[in-house]
Image (cartoon, rainbow, N blue to C red; front, side, top):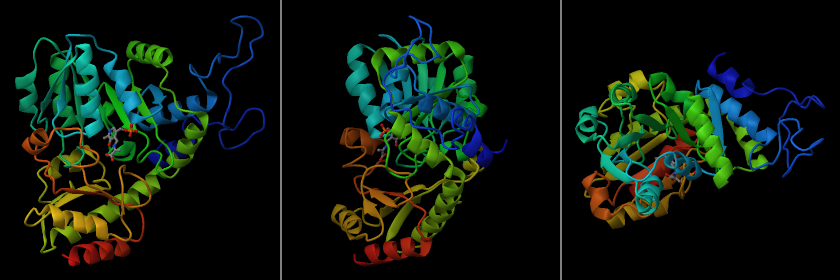
Length: 381
Ligand code: P1T
């Protein structure tokens, strides 16, 4: 099956009792048993829920994986992965990544004895140099949030395999429509389902997809023991959202490319970070690793003036200023004070994230209106 057909059909059967084409919302906390332990495969809704099962199977199919597990948020999924490790284990993560991922690593799991190193993994040689006998996992985003750097999944996985280290890829920015990390050698794919998979800014959810049976069992145990489960209504909304993922992503990519080209030629813009631009250092890798370049970009204004960046963000009429991304509507974010505020300023700046960076999640509106909005907002400077 090809991607669009899988998005609509994989793992989804008409409801066996009524023939309903849409997966029912099983709004129940428990399931009646005939006698103790004799049941239809469902015992308690923290452990399993039929709406969730269908979504998990659909997500596994989209990522070409065997097991899918959904969580109450992207960070709930990250939390579960980090619980696979124990005090003394070391994790190497990209130095450009979502601020909340940095925060759970440094402010929560470091307190429990895990150690973290943040390294520029856009050059795989940096990974080889950072690995120690304690290294148990490598965590990458590609493209990264918010600087849209590309990390070579196959090259990184060749290194992690040689050292018997787990490779986790946060595939949120690309979505499975653009990139399938398991096919490139990753061990675990993680998603903030809140973003492109849900696609309509109405749900918070996370997911993990993987092939290894033993790790999947351990993650299912952790989920049941710790409780980070999504509700069935949210699972229904995401199943509905995924049915148009391929169509939405096509428009996100088309619009973002046009917005990136517009910004690139703007006399007041100094830099545009978008993997689809020939000037982007990861452009060649993006062409081989991804099927298109995605809907996310970030840019900087000439002069690096904070008041000017703020004025642009306040002046938008179609772009809304807010956290999150991947919905049908265009959003603008100020990473330094919003999504990445939990990373200390010196560390942000060392990694190239300036206070004046503006991040755009390019939606699927008419692109002429988006460009006109940028024109009027930047034009006010
Ligand atoms: O928000 P949540 O569903 O818990 O997902 C966390 C997360 C994980 N990974 C990446 C790459 C993300 O971008 C996020 C959430 N990011 C935002 C809210 C944001 O605006 O960047």
